Image (tube, one colour):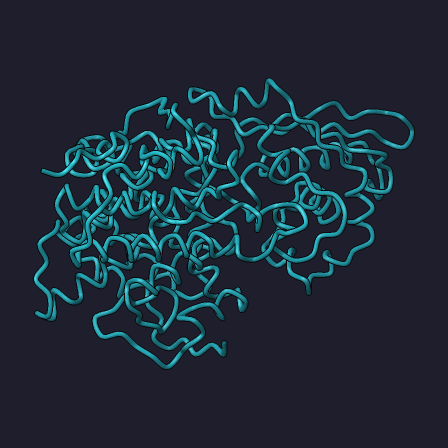
Length: 489
C-alpha cells in the first residue's frame, strides 16, 4: 500500500480533478478569454519585434519540424510539445508585457499558457491523425479555458501567502507547479499520477532569483518561465511513461522541500482554490514591470501639471522626484548605478519614470534596447539620479490586502525654485480589475499586437474562435500560425 501524498500535493490534485467552474459564471469565462487573447497578443508582439528572443526558438534551428507537433504561434515552426512549451513561454514573457499578480510572492500567471497550449495542440494533432488515442479531457477551447483558469488559480493561491523569494527561489517555480498539475490532467493521467507529477516539482532543483537581482539582471528573466514550462511538460511525460512520485516530497526529513525552505509551518493559503486569480490578475497596458505601471501613470499626470504651469523644458526644472512605493517595488526595481542591458532597464523604476518625463509618453519595449537612444542618454541618467524611492508601510499593506490588491505609487516633484508639485497617488492603474478602462485598454492592446502579423479579418476570426467552446484546439492554433515567416535568426 502506497503512502498518502503530502496534503498540499493532494489538495492541488483534488482541485484539478474535482473543482467545477460554474458554467453560468459569465465573469470568470469572460476574464479567461480576455487573459487568453492578451497572452497571445504578447507572444505575437515578441515574435514580430524581438530578434533576440527569436534566436532562442527551437534552440535556433529553423529547418526542423515535428510531425503532429505544436504550431508555434506567430512563426512557421512546428515543434514537439516540450520544446514548444519553452518557445511559447519565451515569446509570452520576453518583453515583460504579460499579466501579473503581486502578493507575498509575485509572478505572471499567464506564463502557464505555454505548457497548456503546446500540449493540447500536439495531442489534438496526434489524435486527429490516428497516431494517438487520447484518454484525457476533450481537446477543445472550453477545456483550454478550464486548464487556464485552474493554472492561474494554483499559481495565484501559492503567491498569496508564500514568499519563495525569501529563500532566494525565483517565482517561476510556481509556473512549473501549476503547469505540471494541469498538463498531467490534460495528458489523461489519473489523480494518483497527477500527485506523482506534482511531487517531482518539489524534488527538482529550483532556479534562484539572481538573474533578476541588482548587478546581475540578464535576459534569462525573459525565458525563465519558458524553461519552467518545458520542465513541467517533461515531468508529466515522465510519469506518463511510468515513473512514480515521492509522497513526502515536501515533508520528508531531512531532505524534503520544506526542510530546506519553509520549515515546519509549511505553506499558507489565505483562500481556497476557486477562480479568484483569473478575476484579479493585473493586465499590463505598457511593457513595464508591474510594480512600476502606476508610477508611469503618476509621472504622466505630473508632466501634465508642469505643462499647465507653462514651464518650458520641465525636466530641466526638476530638482528631485520622490516615489512613495511598496516594499515589493523597492526590492525588485529600485536600482541605482549603471544598467547593463534591456532586462536591467525594464526592471528599474527610476529608468521608466525618468524615460516617461523625457519622452512625454509611456515606455515602449524598444526604449530598453541597447540600440535605443534612451539607453545612452545622459539626460536620462542625470534624471534617474534625482529619483528617490521610499517604501511605504501603508501602500505595502494595501498591496498585500486581498480585498484591495492595490499596486500603488505616489510621485512628488520638487522644482529647482523649491516649489512642490503635490503627490499624485495612483493605486489602481489601467489594467487593474478596479479600473473602469481596463477592458477596453486590454482589447486595444491586443489589436495593436496582432496587427504586427495578422490582418484585421484574421484577428477577428481569432477573437471569434475563443467563444467556440467545442472548437478543436488544433483548429484554433492553425489561425495563429504564420507559415510564410522567414526571419533570419
